[in-house]
Amino acid sequence: MKRFLVLATILLIRSIPGLSQIPNNSIGTSDPDAKKILDAVTAKFKTYKTVKAEFTMNIEGSNGKLQASKKGLIYMKDTKYRVSLTGQEIFCDGTTVWTFDKSSNEVQISQYDPTTSAITPQKLFSNFYDKDFLYKQNADKKQGGKTIQEIELTPVDKTKAFFKALVFIDKATRNIVGTKVFEKNGNRYSYMVSKFSPNAKIDDSMFSFDPKKYPGVEVIDLR
Image (tube, rainbow, N blue to C red; front, side, top):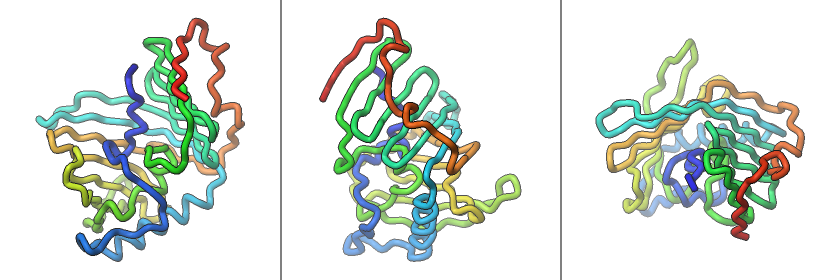
């Protein structure tokens, strides 16, 4: 079954533990100004009870040409989330994760474990830096009348498949508006948030997969 692309949100960054940890400065030095910005983003995100966000995912090849572009939606509430992206969806009710692929009419069920390093949509907006990364602030940019701050993340582990990731932050709102990951093979993956709606009314039923709504769905239970 196709893997759901959004859960590689900062693609290929697979080891993101708790927010309270700081970079391992014995390996390198991070920019303290960048840390202040990232801390402010995290603090702002924690004030939201729910979040609904619309985004566009673009994939570029090593030649710089656009290979694919997809639009998606993210819903978040506490540890619960739902992600929709062109025929694929992930549901998580805080206990169970359902990964549904429309083309094969197949759903994969797994146990949600908050102690693991798996990427979740919440980590896109709040938990994207720790002791495994060094970071620095690049020059600000203007975009549609907004000032966008750019933070560059570099993995300490040089065996990872990517060599850097950029996080784009609206300076005025302290919200993340996009990310871009640079793979060593030349591919580039970007996620740009087009609409961010905090504290939207979201019913808990949104985060559970109901097989009755998907006739003939094949269930693969990995719990």
